[in-house]
Structure formats: C-alpha cells, structure tokens
Length: 273
Image (cartoon, rainbow, N blue to C red):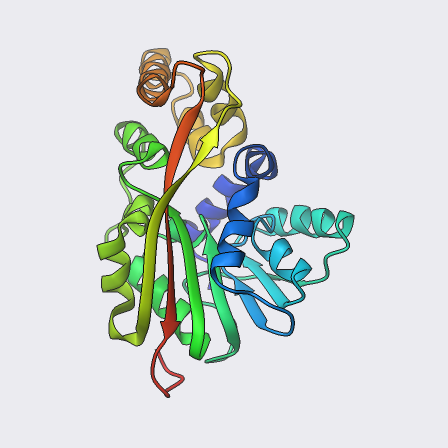
C-alpha cells in the first residue's frame, strides 16, 4: 500500500542522480557483495532496494536468475538501461523492502548493497529478507557503518532534517553488527561479518564532496531543498558537511568510507519469517 511516507522516500531517491553516485563512488561494492554471497549460475537471487543494479547486474552477469526490486521506478528504469549496455538479463520489479511481493522461500540468495538500510522500519524489512529466502539460502548485506563517513554524513544532516516518523530507525544502524544480528536473530546461522572501506578519491577540492552530494545524492539534496529560503541554515549545513569531509580527508585528498559486509545462512525448515 502506498503511503505518504513511501511517496516521500520515492521522491527523495528519484531526485538527483543516484546512478552517477553508484557509478562514480561505489562501483566495486556490488561485485564485492555478490562474491561474498557466492552467487553462481542457476541461483535465484533477489536484490532488495537494488537502486540502479549495483549488485543485481553483477549477479546476473554471474549467471544467476536475478530479480532487482526497488521502491523507486526511476531508479529501476535507469538500471534497465545500464543492464542492457552490459547484456545483463534480469527482472526489474517495483517493490517496497518492507512488503515484498514475493513468496516465502522463493530465493536462494537475498542481498542488498547499501539499499535496505534506508527502509525506515528495520524489523519489518529484516523480516521480509528472511521470509523470502529459502532455508539454507544466503542473506547478504553491505551497509554503511555509523562511525564511518556516510554514517557521520547522516548524523551531520540530522539537525537540519524533519524528525523521522515514530518507530523509524537511522539507516546506519544496519552497519552495526550487533543490530543486524539482533534483527535476524535465530532465524539465521553461520553469520560472517567484517568491516571494510572503499577509497574515494574523486573530490580534489575541499568543498568537492559537498557540492557533488547536494547535487546528486537524494537524501542530501532533499535536506537542502527543505532549507530553501533560509540562507543562514543553508550556510550552517554547508559548513557541517565541509567539516565532515575535512575530518575524513587524507593529505592526498582521498577518503575511506567504512562499510559492514554481513552474510548469513537462512536457518530452519519453515518458510515463514
């Protein structure tokens, strides 16, 4: 069911140019997750909150039978075009990560690359990940950590944002291993979790990150739009983002953005969540 909250989320991710962000900054993360999940030919794979197919396309190129699902049709449309340029064949389905339109135990692998972490109600989203994965199948998640750069970006933007709806949790909590283990509970086994980082060397100028993200990254663009007509708060947000980039910026201008990569096996014989 479409709700005002879901419509707002669609609008946020349709704004800017997320395809550029995924291609310019994190192109290797989808491949990394697909490899960690052991995706192989013939497997049924679901990419939840797939965006433009950062993980779904590599999974399809590995020979899997892939469904890429996302709340935002504009991202799926862009993903279809990207897949065509690589001769990757997969299904693209508009779907809410908190209410997936798939059967219990339908997939061998259920994964999400910095995607499901943005579903506001973590427990509901986790229940869906488990529900659609078959017993013995793999659940694989790559999420930005709270202490890492993107986690701190959301912390920096929080004072300028409208309060979240009751019960919603911050996206970077999906990058906290203890939080994800608690969400999945005893419905999974063989949890393997590790942190890593992606090196971002795109922003040569001190304000390069801020200008790029306020133009291309939906959540940042949305905050700036909400501040339209308030130059004082806009300037304060500019300063907060420049200070954030400065904290993570190395002498050569590069940054390391930390993520958590977690894989687990769906336990049990039941197909329910």
